[in-house]
Length: 134
Image 1: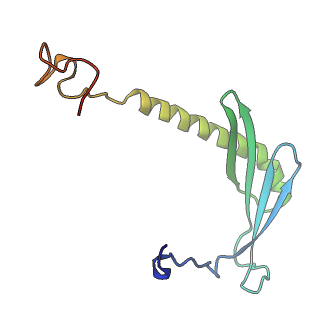
Image 2: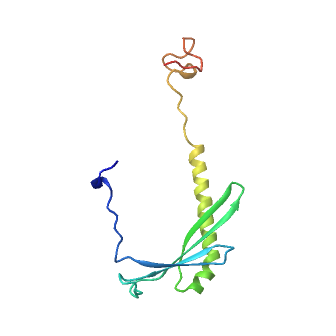
Image 3: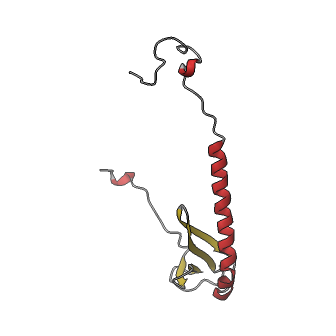
């Protein structure tokens, strides 16, 4: 068991507190509104309210979760910008998938030394089979 001193000390930032409210139509997704608050829970007017959106799209590969920030000052404005945020998040996910596919396809496979008759131990010598002994 880990000693008490080995455990990380986790502290909340008292100057960065937010109250979270979730709005959903139970169909298309959710909007989260983060309202800045002070340590006593009162609204902090010095910091901006933040909005984010979340949804899931069904794809042939399964469910694709999308999460995105929404630049808005009110809930009404965030609702209006929700579809735009979904499209941007979907485009980003598609771009990331394409990049991962490109990286995967461009990996150079380097054969083991002695495999396929290349290098020392290759060719007609012993050990040319696929079974390897320690």
